[in-house]
Each structure stands twice: as structure tokens, then as C-alpha cells.
Amino acid sequence: MRLKNLLIAALSFLALPNTAISQQRCEATGIIIQLRPGVQPEALVRQLNAKWPTADFILKKTLSKRFNAYLLRAACERFSDLDLLRNEVAVVSALWDQAIEFRRDSVPNDTLFPTQWNLEKIRLPEVWSVAQGGRTTSGKEIVVAVLDNGFDLLHPDLQGNIWRNEQEDFDGQDNDFNDYPDDVYGWNFHDNNPLFPLTSSHGTNVLGVIGAEGNNVIGVSGMNWKVKMMLVHLENLSEAIPALEYVLEMRERYNASGGLEGAFVVVTNGSWGAPDPVFCSEFPLWGALYDSLGAAGVLSVAATTNNHNYDIDKVGDMPTSCPSEYLITVTASNNLDEKIDGLGFGKTTIDLAAPGDSIPTTTTGGTYRGSFSGASAACPQVSGPIALFYSLPCADLEELAEADPAAAARLVRDAILKGVEKLPSLKNRTTTGGRLNVYNSMKYLHSYCIAKPTEREAGRFDEIYIDGRGFVHVYPNPVQDKLTIAYSILDFQRLKFRVYNMLGQEMLPPILQQSSPFEPQVFEIDVSDWPSGTYFVNIFDFGQKISAKFVKL
Image (cartoon, rainbow, N blue to C red):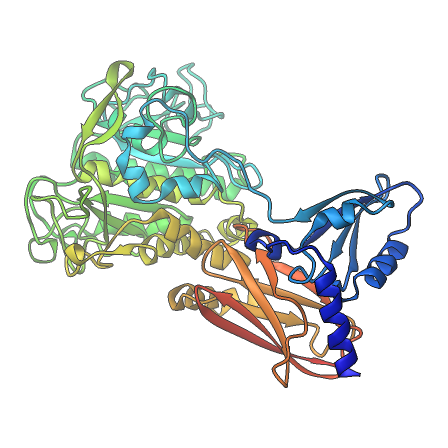
């Protein structure tokens, strides 16, 4: 009997045209086929299997009853020529089923984008293919509080991304009863009014890095194509306390009112600090404010000193010596991934580096500059992605931000810090030893967002990311008919699955699945006609094998 089957297989193979089987075709997950009116797919499958018995055609699913379209599966290594199907009288058309190419433009059309070397360095365009910022999955408006001065509200690349307090009007009244009348765009804590004098260009430079409008055919692209930036003007250290408190109150109002008041501020940007070295322990209230902001769901990002090659661990700096778990501290690196000379560093105080050498951005007068440098330029390249991550298509992150804002803030913080690209030049000079890598940080959040609740509670998503491996989960187990395979991996790519019995015999042709970011990673196979016994599912990811065992009843 075995010899007879082998002979049939050999004769059937020889009967097929001698065409090369391309890798693309052999990786096909099926054949999309349209039949002529009145033709039943089950009848066609029987005819095809009688004609080419080794091809093992099966009807996988109905695509459209109206258009008589179906998805077939065949052993692609034994059937590679779709012209054979197209020549069948019952067939209108046939096409290999493959993973679609998502053609969303992840490279913005802003005229100065080609000069923004820093964005490619941190792999930001790869994240833009998934999210560009602005709103959460349910439509919440994401806000960055920018504590700085010199805001050009009329800059054409910024106007659309300036936050507006919808509860307030320019009428001299405190319409939202927060003790800041007319705080439509934020507040000027130096002059104690809602106006923003152009005392410098610094604030406009920072705004452009975080949120210059992307893909609008002009100027530069911010790290968020769409986002809302709350303006908080300050000039002296004494103004930092009420400024941070203002942000805190706006987020607390938002949390308490279910979004009807205040603002969904997720991060503050502080590209400034004390001019002389001082430890946070000398003014603990400042650090305590960062803790309070974090408890409400707001991370803070601070730039280290620009003009002194200080070891912050030894000499101090404000605010980057503050030990709050909700504060991320930043130094700057150049295009060679070296720390820029003269900037502060610290093995226990400065968390990471970000590009900060000749960064193109917006400046006052509706124009642009290509030389924004230092820790001031690096800082918004960390706060910007924090806001961007809240716009990822991850309902679990948004739900966490509602149920436990502090936990959501810590999760995003961990994504930033654990996603860094390790660099020899930053070893022992930052707590992470690395430079910002936004794509790696997105993968960290992806592990959280697709993990099962029990895995999230146990922190397994963190282990998955660090180990460079994923998981594969099969259910029901034991199984009688349909087996569901759910999986998580480190990267977004096509994966190969193989299913074996206890004797090491492969039960199916290799199954290739596309892993799309933040989409459910799950598929189903029919095992109803398999013999009872124990089987293994293997997933191959970056050359590593991850396995799961199941029992067929």
C-alpha cells in the first residue's frame, strides 16, 4: 500500500508542468478562487483531488457567496502552477493568497524631513506605520505639557497642534474654575497671565521636535504628526513648582471627571534646569511633585546640564538628580552615537541618551532652523514618543490608563528604558547604557498589548521581551475538532509554524503567518480527522524555536 501511494505521488508530480516553485508561492497560505455561477466548491475540490491527488486540496473558507469566491488550501510544494486551475471550466479566476502589503505612508511628505537624521536613528518612521499620534484608540485627545518659554503660537507648522482648553474662553473670566482665568492654551507663570511673549525661540524649537504637524507638505515633521501641546511658560526655578502643579491639577481634573474637564496630559517636557549643581535632596518638594504627577498618570522628562561635563551622581543637578520613578532623565548623543562633549552624565541619575546634535526644527517667525542642539533637543525626543505610544492601537494600554494611571505611566516608562539600543559609549554614563530606540519601545508595548491577562498580571510580557522570545498557546487542550493557536513574538514578521506527532512526522505543510503589529495573533487548524495522541506546535522566531504540546482525543 505504501509503495502504491508513493508511485501515485511520483506519477502525479511528473504530470505537473516542470515549473520552478518560487519561495513566494510556496509560502502562500492558500488560493483565492472564484467559480462560475452554480458551481459548488465542494464538488470542485473533489474533482481537483481526483485529478491531482497529491495536491490535497481542501476548502478553507467561503469568501463571498454572492461572487462565488472561496479560499482553498493545497500542498504548495506539490502544486505550484495556478494556470492549471485557471484552465478548469468551472473556474473564473485563481490567485495565491499572501499577506497584504500595508501601504500606509510611514514617511511624511514634509519638505525638510530628509534632513531629520535623528528620526531614522531612533527608528521612528517604523513606528509611524502603526501610529502617528494625536488620539487614543477611543478618541481621547493626548496632551504634552511643554514647560518652556518663547512659544510662537502662529507658526504654520505648530498652530494645529497647540492644545486648547475647551472649558475656557478669552473673556477675563475663570470659566472652568481652576483659578487661571483665560488659560485657553496654558499659563504664563512668570507674568501670571495667559499671554506668551516671544522672549526667546527655545520653546518654539522644542514644540517642533515634539509636535510639528507631520505630512502637511511643509517644514519638518514632529515626533507626533498630530498631538496637543499645552503651553506652560516659565523663566525662573521658583515658577517650576506652580507650573508642575498646574499640569497635575489638569490631569487630576481629567481623571476625576471622566474626561469632561482638565486635560489628558501624559507627559511633561522640561528642557531646562538649575544653572548650578545641586542635589534634589536639598529641595525634596520638587521630586515629590514628579511622584504626584506620576500617580495621576503623567511622566516627566528632564534634560541634563548642557554646559558642564558633570558626573551628576557626584555633583548633582536639578531636576535630573531627583529619584522619582516617574521622571526620565536625558543626555544627548550625536550621529555617531557618542555622548556630546560637555553634557552631564551619571550611571545612577541619567537614564538614557537621545539625538541632540544639529536637530532640524521650528523656530520663531514661522521659519525653521537646522542646528537645535544639546540636551534641550534630546529631551523632547523622549517626551514625544511617550505621547505617541498612547495613540498605538492598544485598547489594553488605554484601559490601564483609565483604571490605574500610575501603572500605565510606569509601563510606558519601562518601554522607553528597556527598549534602548545599548552602546559602548554610554556604558556607565547612563542607567540603561543606551540610546533611545522608539521601535524597540513599541515592541515592548506590543508584548504587553497582545499578552493574555494572566501573563500581564504575572509580568510575562516583560520576560518575553527581554528573552527575545515569544510564546505559543494552544486551546482547547485536549482537543477534538478545531485547535486554536495564539502566539506572541518579539518582532513583526512572517513566522513559520510546524506541527509534528510523537514520531516526529510533520502533520501539515509548514504554515506561514503574518504578524501584524497589535493585531490578534491567532489562527485555527482542523484536527478532527487526526489520530488520537500527543502533538507539538513549533514556532520559529529569529532562529529560535518555541513549542507547545497538545493532546488530540
